[in-house]
Length: 413
Image (tube, rainbow, N blue to C red; front, side, top):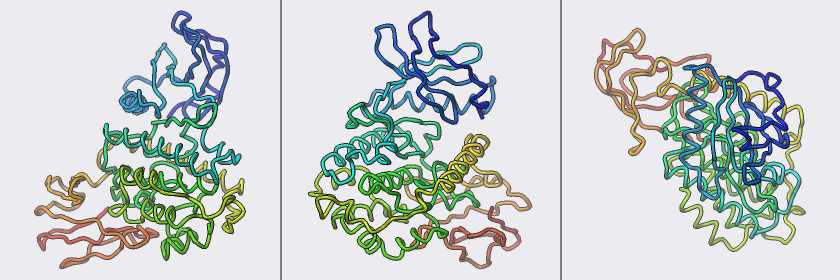
């Protein structure tokens, strides 16, 4: 991972590439570097992301190269921040990007800037986001960290551009466990933390779109975490329509139906982006009253609790740190015998590579099956039960149909 930000010098008033770029103003910082406003050779404002150059042939260099490669692959779309140029020196990397002078969507929602209660503005902004994510998926790029903080705004707050491809991947089936921000992670992604059960990146992005839509509509998050440990989420699982009607009575029946389709705990039944765009475009209204903020009964005080927010940010940093050692692996440790067919949804293991303390006797298959909350059952079907980890809590193990020779000892990791 990159060194601490204090290890980066102040680049304000510096010039890059023989004066082609003049850095004029510090804008902010993130986990990976500092961001500045600059002027290019034609005096056009741009943003420049400044990073310490990673060691050659390091894992960090590999991750950064992947981020730039995938980001450049989708640059040029009007709703995606474009990379204009990457400048390398002996010690630093400078990434020249579109400048978005309206801040990010998170700040706009938090400050109640005119989105909540405005049908046409919400529709206009959200459709742009759908177009950006659809473009990424069409080009084989899955963002995996969709959240308002990574959606940048124009100065008038009406044009959006998707940013920060640091956790993006070109693998639709992901083996690297939890990835992204907990508020916006799908239940199947959260459930993969302990067991390395794979999840589909495209459906995970769709789930995050649903959380963002809810935030645009209400100014809130619907729950902290899509897991059994969150009472609000479990209340939603027990009755999605009733949950939204009772907690947000000013949301229209039409948008409640759409939210239920986007936030389906079962990824296989989640709506696709094209169908979602059509539904959003054709919806008459998102609200039942003129000023929906007056009708909200659902107020989760914990969402504004600074201590909990700090804990959430710390958790996200730990996830990013863990990802630095795991994301380069296409398969998790001890699971190198598995391959997955993302088209059929069937997970097939047939490469005959040995598991620890056991050999693969013959090919076997298992199909993903989730309970109504989106978490995977801990039951197993077959002639013999597979051993499971008694310390895992909860136990997100897949119910499987397994074929094996009697003399083989089987273990799921």
